Amino acid sequence: MTAETDLKLHIEKRPESKLPQVDFSKLVFGQVFTDHMFLADYKNNKWEEPKIIPYQALAYEPSAKVFHYGQAVFEGMKAYKDKDGNVFLFRPEENFERINRSAQRLGMPPIPKEYFMEGLKQLVKLDKEWIPTGEGESLYLRPVYIAIENAVAASPSTDYRFMIIASPAGKYYVGDVKVKIEDKYSRACDGGVGFAKAAGNYAAQFYPTELAKEEGFQQIIWTDSKEHKYLEEAGTMNMFFRLGDTLVTAPTDSSRILPGITRKSIIQLAEDNGVKVEVRPVTVEEVIEGAKNGNLKEIFGAGTAATVLPIRGVKYKDFYSDLPQLEDSYADRFKKLLMDIQYNKTEDPYGWRYPVK
Ligand SMILES: *Cc1c(COP(=O)(O)O)cnc(C)c1O
Image 1 (cartoon, rainbow, N blue to C red):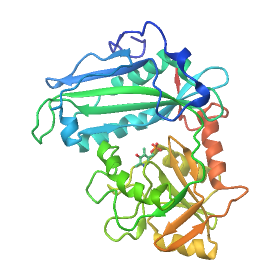
Image 2: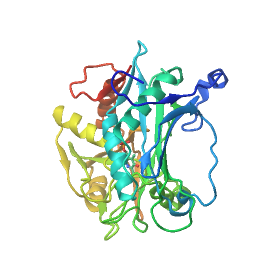
Image 3: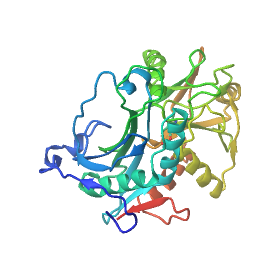
Image 4: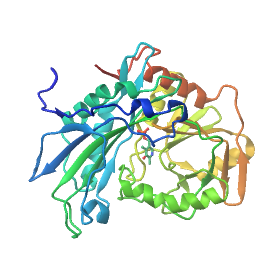
């Protein structure tokens, strides 16, 4: 298909684009999908020829294993357009490696690198007109990998399907976000699947998050399942705490925390911009003490969807504190540094931008 690989990719174009029907001023995150999708099946112990087809509903038998055993993993990433119309992905090889780590943990065969990379590239190229160009806007990309063997037996599927879909995303806006530190439910445990972008991890968070919402908190910060003593991460974001002028975040070498690419990038940017970073277990106690004595200056989340999300207030058991609104916050600073690289507004000394040509 391209000069770089000899991957055969069959492309079936949609006769007429849906683009004129979309109101880009009213985009709700993850609700509208582009004209095309990428699809590749794994059967009889091998990958079949991949294809790009019009985005469409697909039929699955009720016995498909994904419905029964949740053998499903996904990724989340974005394509960005600069002011001249050049298109970039951000560190896509990291997503590739991560989806295969997730897949391995769920007993699924690895996705070939050229399927993942070429699939993304060709899909983004084909649906390039769908990338919005306003401030903070992008094309959200969702690779998803599922078990499709028709059999109700609790064992790994023989057949799989890997797909990529794309959704134009407006500037991320959720209003003020207050978080509840969870001390009853857990998201992940040692030796479990917390580090994987496994579909079931998210379903397991919905009920406790609904309870938190009823109390007026939009997100939960999860704590370790053993003692509820250490802060881990939120539903789809890693967490940073600014204690004094030090940025602190939990390590991801346990199997419990998802190693975010945004997190990894912010750690690098902070270190290179003279901010002291500590990657270490963060106790609930030190953060709550900090909220009481003023040492806690900021909490923010980091993830692809929001990039950086400042937190306005934090609750733990009966304690609640608003967080100070700083003029020169680390959240704003690192968000700008990161987005300037993503949108090709600045040099990229790290080689994080990945041009889609
Ligand atoms: C995807 C995700 C993140 C953020 O990862 P990024 O690579 O930065 O988008 C953090 N935590 C969880 C649980 C996630 O699913």
